[in-house]
Image 1 (tube, rainbow, N blue to C red):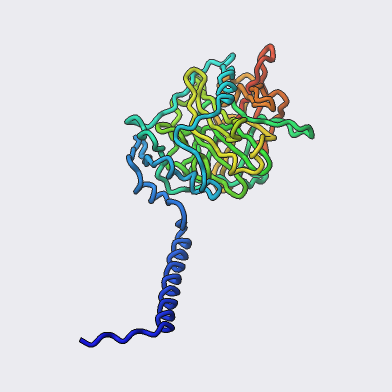
Image 2 (image 1 turned 180 degrees about the horizontal axis):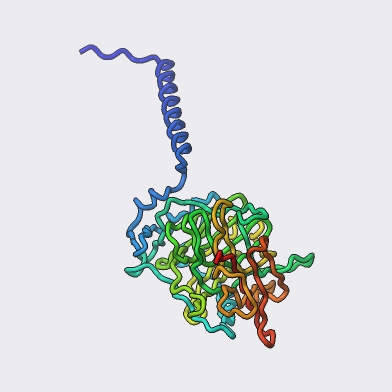
Length: 391
């Protein structure tokens, strides 16, 4: 058989270039399609996460959690966390543990019981994995407001904005747990807030049917880090807990005129690493450390915060009836079963937990309210918040 005639070098190079260009065009086309469909070209989508789950847990309310390897959780899709040294056995520094153990979380003068934090059944996720809720990733938390009952409304006790260099390395409060009535495209929350520059961390309880597809009272966290606005673990929060997810159910809930249930929420900065840790519970039971926000995802909160608050928040659109905040009733000074926050504390510049004493009240809509009710001997403050119930 006669051998094939060799191809000239310049022709071979031409064909290689054409093939490379075609492959590059195909790759760019695929990336464009993925981008158009909202699928990230880097990291794992929520569907990808379910494929990598080592275990799947379905709750009685229909929520599905995928037990995902610690290193494949959504936090590490953050561009600033691509190269990290975090691991599933991380804990706050011993300095921070000493600080938090000194906290005197009480319920002075309150006829209340600590609500249960409902863990995932079957023992939760295996060691080395974390529970990530399978969700459509709806993000209902606009920040715009106006003078009508639409947009976001706050009723808060807050630290005063003063020219002095007061800083906060943490914020905490005991907040009564309720189940306010809200509609789809609305939410209602009781929460703590810490801010620094353009960054904000919020944690507490919420009823948010648009986000969670139910009207249950759930724990939540919300992060504003620069241009990123995210719920729970969606933009940089590193989850460590294997059996308590970031949207854990809180039960039972308070019923006006009956038993009142509360829980403690606490955010604090580790003075060693600069990471911001999140803790839930710890009044009558052991607190649960859920995880942390890495220092490097922030700008304003890379160091201490400059503002702290606790109270209520609602959101609605103008075409809907206004949602309930707390019990739905405007707070009064003698109504002991109003929704409230109490034990409002901050971590000061010496990393000591102290009561937030230099505070004022804030609401951006007069239909809702917040009050400062002091005990007989002014040893503690209770900040009831609420409104408006159409009845």
